Image (cartoon, rainbow, N blue to C red; front, side, top):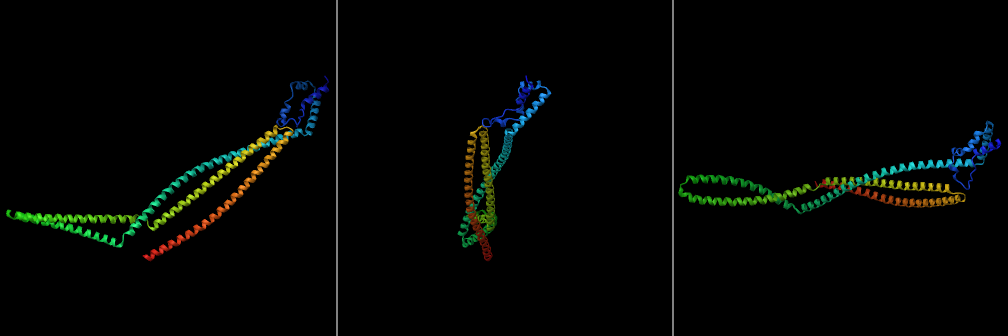
Length: 378
């Protein structure tokens, strides 16, 4: 065979066939190693059979045809598209890592939210118990106030008189018992010293004295019972007065309830913040997932499209852009509505703060007047 023809065929074998960009979009999958690996064994055999001069000529022809191929721009387009695809894959990897970090943060926020919910439930139970205790104290105080108002000064004076009378009766009873015992001993001695004839008369006197002693004992017992009942009533009223909270204790209860309410409000605000943060992260995650899915879909459709189908893909991408802009407009409208709601709530909050300030001022003035009243009363 002609060595020139063999050299030309070998050079043609080294140069890859030109791909039609309108019918095949698979050139972005090729690499320089794949192009060099397409040489068949027969073509390698042709190169081995050539001499050094023919191999040099074949290499020169390959270089010329390769330069012509690079000049045509197809190889540059393949490399550019390969670089764009590599950049897109790196971007997807970065976004995937960022999404994973955000998911981890969302899980941590959810765990913190669950712990805050448990703590809020415990605080709510504590507030419920404190509220029940406060209501019970209020009812007890009202009952005691009603009872103390119902007991007049005359009744208290009568009770004190009865207590004094009870003490006097106990002293009289003790003295009477001593006198009776001494009289009994005296009479027994007299009876023993008298003759038997006078025993009947002495027995009559003793029986009369015993009846008198029994009557006086019953009378003293009744008086003792009456005094004991009065003492129990007085002790009950005294315990009720002691159990009723004083003004300082009521103020301390009010201060404690105020602190609990403030802690609950702070915890509620913190929980609301966690909820809002979780919702924002969840919404952002949804947008990122949609964006990744959209990019993958565009890449796959554009890779499989050929010729005029690429224009349709471009039109569909334009429609997607319009939909995204419409979604953005809706989000901006929602943001505007949320800002208006925020302004209205801020105005309402300012009014409530002013009302609270006036309340504290009135409470302070009322306490000052109460102290002044106590000083004047004392």
